[in-house]
Each structure stands twice: as C-alpha cells, then as structure tokens.
Length: 359
Ligand code: MEV
Image (tube, rainbow, N blue to C red; front, side, top):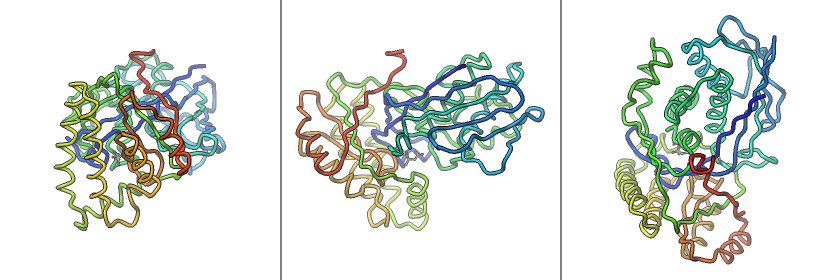
C-alpha cells in the first residue's frame, strides 16, 4: 500500500487576473490535505472516495487504456491524472499495473462541509504523486506541476492552474500562468515527456519567504461557492463589456508586482497595503453582477479583520467559502475571533504547509 497527500491552497492575491497567461498570483499551501491510497491488485481496478461518498468506479485494462465499467463518473480529475501519468510512465519504460485507489479528503465535503481549499487541484497532484511512487518515477516539483497541468487543462479549460502550483510546491509561492492554448496546441503529436521537457511560455513558480511577523488567518463563511460558475460569470461580463476588465488587469499587474517586492523585502505593512488594494480591484470587477465575488458574509469577515488592524479579502473565486486576513503577529486576535464567531464566520486554525521546511 502506498499513500501520498497534497495540501489545500488559498489565494492571497491575483485571482481572476491569473487566468490570463503571463499574469501572476500569490498563493499559499495550508496543512489540510487530500490523501490518495494505492493498493496493487489484479483483474479489476477501482476508485473509491470518502470525499464524494459514492460507489467505487471500476475499470479494467484494454491494452494501455483504462476502460470504465460505467459511462458516468464523477472522477474526471483523477482519471485525467492517471492517463497523463501512465503515458509518462510508459515513455519511461514502465509496464502498467492495476490498482485500487482510495481518496480521503480534509478539503471539500469533509464532514459534509465544503471549504473551497482547492480539492480538484489537490486530488490531481496527490494522484500523480502516488502513481509516480508506484511506477518508481522521481518527479521534481516543476515536473509534478506540468503533469498536473496537462491533466487539468482539458477538464477546466479556463483554470489558471495556480491551485496545482500551490499544491505541488507548498509554502508561499508567486505563480505566473502559462499559455494554455499554447500547451493544448503543442502537445498534439508530442509525448508527455517531450512536453514536460519544453520551456512553457510565461510559466514561473517562485517560492516566497514570508516576513517573520506575518500571520495568516482564515475565516470560513459556511457558504459553498462554485468557482466554474463565478469564472464563467466574469468571462461573460468581460465579453459583454460590462466590466472594466482591462483596468482590472492593469491594476492587478501593478498590485502583484508591489506585493511580490514586499515579500522579497520582508515588509508585512506593504503586503497588507496591497491586499487592501486587491480587495478593491475585485470589488470593481464584480460590481453590478448578480452573483457577487464578495458576498455579505465575506464583507463582514473583511470589515471585522480591518477593524482589528488586519488586511483581508476573499480568496480564490469568492462567492462564499473562505476569506483570508493578514496580521502583524503582535496583534491579539481573540476579539476578532469573537466578532467573527458572532457574525457566523468560523475561524479555521490552519498553518502554512511547506514540505521543504517541514518534511
Ligand atoms: C479560483 O480559485 C481562482 C480563479 O483565479 C480561477 C483560476 O485561477 O483558475 C478565480
């Protein structure tokens, strides 16, 4: 039996803008995990998940392909990760095996709750990691990211893959999105290994060092949000010119450049200043839309954090799920947690997860 895990993630800044290739986001991995367990078997393989609470999906091999025993399956991300990793394994001379996979998630749908911590990204990364061990392949974080991105671009064509980078690298990162159209074009007729060897236009994942006095606080609104629906809403408004999208992108670029510089120079105050600016940019982006990026619960979460001296914003697509707040660690957060709890916001006690520092 082999088990691998991948962490959940939160966006600190750059969401929506990072959908455009060449734009950056800052993300952080947190110590809540999705685990995938692999048990070698013979005959039929299967996939079960306590996360989705559904019956196992079964498969058999036909040549190099996995053939499912039923048409409908909710495990697109897992199957795509298997397909990409097994092509890569074959190209490295491995013969394919049969196995049962079991998924356990502390991210979405854990105890029936949904936090929006990036479960689709984490399940993709954890599946690739467990298969890499099964097939005795050593993957660098960059190769792991590229395999995960190749698995994800078909299923979530508008996704930036920022969640994959956070899950694959851990810690705090500055992620610059690659050109997904380029990747879709280039991989036609190329092996997965050849694709992984290429330099991907714009792609950069750079670990950041957080200032020693920076404290990350997370609040959960209790309301589940749909990232694909919110991204589609923003894209539709962009097409109909209902939003000042170009201004948003220009503002986001400047904000991210300043925030990355603030990380590099270790300034908590400047990071907080840029978080406040990004919150305003997201406000303007969602203004007039039926479904808000910042819901009333997220507004309360941010306003209370500001009142006690923090900088706060939605994280990821918004619309519910979690919000983040950044504080200088000299501030006593007890009154904030009480105010959040009174307002229906649950403080989550999560730590930054960085495997390179805490293996
Ligand atoms: C969602 O977590 C973040 C977005 O930027 C979408 C994406 O990057 O794929 C809204």
